[in-house]
Length: 108
Image (cartoon, rainbow, N blue to C red; front, side):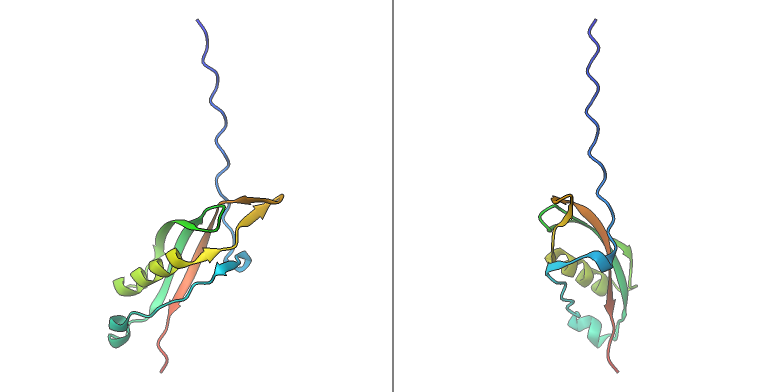
């Protein structure tokens, strides 16, 4: 009886990078939904995003809602359009996680 070779080790999980360390190729541009503006909706949305080694968002997860679906959806759409400068370790681009806080605030 021949024993099966052990499975190769899984690659390490992508690190979580602080938002202050993130650089952009195409920065996030927040578009305030007109209906939300008319309804005077405001709030902060936190989106967790997995960015691949090329700097493209692959997964987005709402981790803190503004309490308004229109604002939450606008925040998710903004993150999906954002392009990030690749994160590198030892000169190699790697995927990473980052939590992006997006603030919808009406001016008085």
